[in-house]
Image (cartoon, rainbow, N blue to C red; front, side):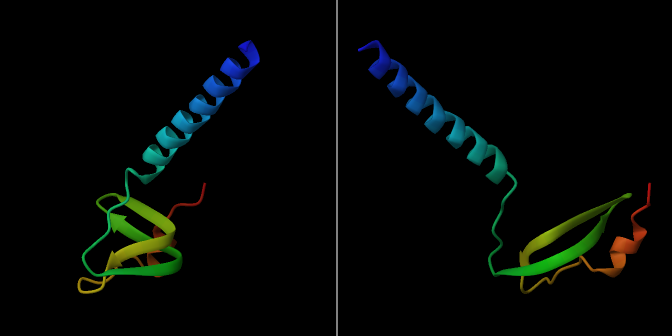
Length: 77
């Protein structure tokens, strides 16, 4: 009986941890009205920072401001 209780608690904890991790990973996701996805490393300049990603989701109407050329602005360490 004790083993069954441990397994059920362990199963519930796995589910809880999985939900928390999924929530943290998806918290920054926002889907635009006319979504389009662009693959490949591209960089966008936002203020004094250069932001890069391999997958970009953007609005078809406004276009994507991230380009491969902007990646040249990243300083090498």
